[in-house]
Amino acid sequence: MGKPVVIWSPAYEVDIGPHVFPTAKYRLVRDRLLSDGVLDPGDLVEAEPVTDATLLLVHTPEYLEKIRENRFTAMERIMLEMPFSSALANASRICCGGTLAAARAALRDGVAVHIGGGFHHAFPGHGEGFCLLNDLAVAAAALLEAGAVHRVLVVDLDVHQGNGTASVFAEDPRVFTMSVHQERNYPDHKPPSDLDIGLADRAGDAEYLAALHAHLPDIVARFRPDVAIYVAGADPYREDQLGGLALTFEGLRQRDAYVLETLLDHGVGVAVTLAGGYAIREGDTVTIHATTVAEALRATLRPC
Ligand SMILES: [Zn+2]
Image 1: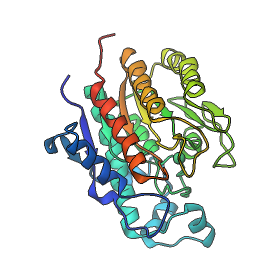
Image 2: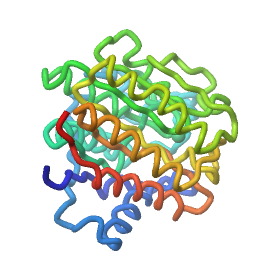
Image 3: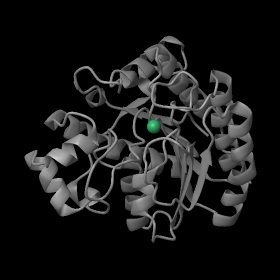
Image 4: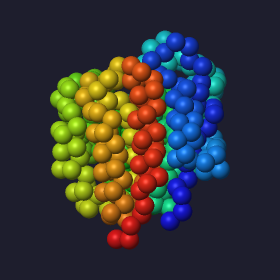
């Protein structure tokens, strides 16, 4: 197996003014990986935007029109919790392309990384919680539509429940959504995933990893996905401003290694996306994401 594809885009660094979401993190993660020698510049592939036809596999035509015309209600703007701009729309569309490209590459190579993605709070007809378009759902739907896969597993390990993705695939047996999150956190209303594991406030490394060990191998064995999309949120970190779990750097690294190993041991390719991360020190978020990428690059597809 060659070196996994690593996808990114400079477009993700959208100017959203003073905001808890650090849009510079994508560039900073890339720079950290380059300066640490984990990546060479030639390893990076730039993401390309998806077409409307691809977005329409998940999102409604009315919603895409609202995005195109910047025509949202006051409530919709409040729910997005992020200032809308054409740059944000452009970044979101490219981001869907990045996760789709990573999923395609994972099918081929075993592992692929998107230094971006994980916008799991976006629904077909509205955005919320910093998520305009659901790159995970678009990527899964596009692979299914193309007949490239029959079953997709979404392993969502952001600290917040993956409400948008759960909702998109609620009635679709071809996609298994698994979410491990902090129960008493956003979103208030959690449409059921195929498996939701809501952890108690301040749950730490041991409880978190025990939950994964208890469920992930069983799901992979029973569902037999053709590919997995891993939503590797950095926000279960103990010093996250929007998270209330208590994972350490080492716990998060072990989480990443375990997810990759479990899937690859079953012969399932993994597309890694980064998702949320709002550490008090921006550098901590960058460290967690960069470690996830390094773990993915270390992992290899083993014969099953
Ligand atoms: Zn989150």
